Length: 403
Ligand code: ARG
Image 1: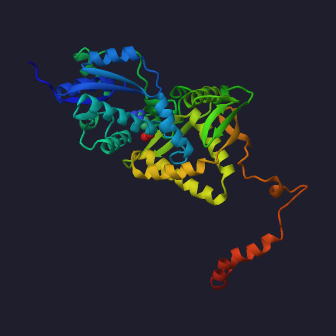
Image 2 (image 1 turned 90 degrees about the vertical axis):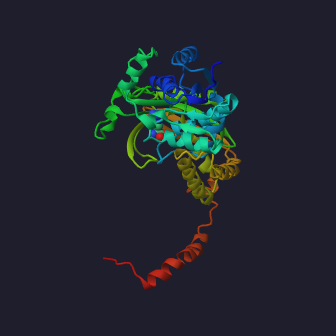
Image 3 (image 1 turned 135 degrees about the vertical axis):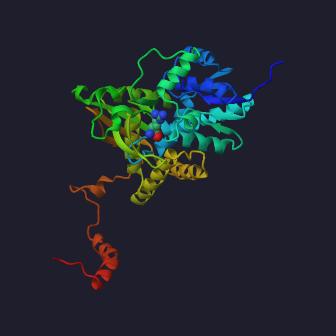
């Protein structure tokens, strides 16, 4: 009777690195490997992926269709929080990690595995997100990150694969490290590591070069109900489909290209390029409508909530109680986020050009400088006197130099 070996559940992308990792986990860690691919929208071929994992020595292969779940339970909360890290990055890669970790842990429980494994390196953010999520979901599972422990480069990985008859991809490998799902595509490495070099054309995989985008702008009307985008140009659509349609239209106008210097969790700065067409349009539309339906004090508070939310996602704290508390505040605010926003797409830009909705607090009678002004101009005087009191009291003692 052959002895049962312990099992490990591996986050399997289907690429060279995680294929090699199957053999590494078998040979160096003496574990049987359950390869799990969680599909969040990078269009994998399920048949080929499964065959590849088997060929590399996996004892079991699972394909998890998770696009809807990703849209409803990860992207939607982030959209309600207008979540952008450093005011720029819509957190596409960061959002997928807690979802992948959840399925790894679930399958570990189903298969009786003692460990989970992933291919993240020791200097990136993804290791932190996978590991913190796993710890939160099951602190008893062992976490194995072979790349962090051995740091195998591409040539070594190729040689390792060739020696074991593991299929090496025939397509030319991109010079960049790429991660993608329908909220965004991230590119790093290669020539991008030189900050003084503008992004070469070949880095962009989705969006049309804004210079070659149509010469006529295109308007897109998004309807929100309680903060949720529910219709595009008057057609009600399930969330995932709506995101995919916005994605296609934004790509055609070169919208969503990002080039930033990012503060990583591990303390280093890296050059990161992203294409986030749907996220750029949807977050802009949501934030605009939300600002129109809440007063300025709640708006100032919501900006802080949003920033805390973005930082939490980035740092891998998705399963923290802080997120539940922030979600509760956000849900309370979203109750009034109803209405329609028109976003104009034109040569790389996405601009809100119109908004409609019964909850919008704009009152033309109060705002107008024309006929029918209902604002009491005299009321401002007394109010300013009181607002000025602490200023004038302090400055009587500490006057500002006038020359
Ligand atoms: N810097 C981005 C983030 O931390 C992108 C990470 C992408 N991951 C990757 N393995 N290429 O969210």
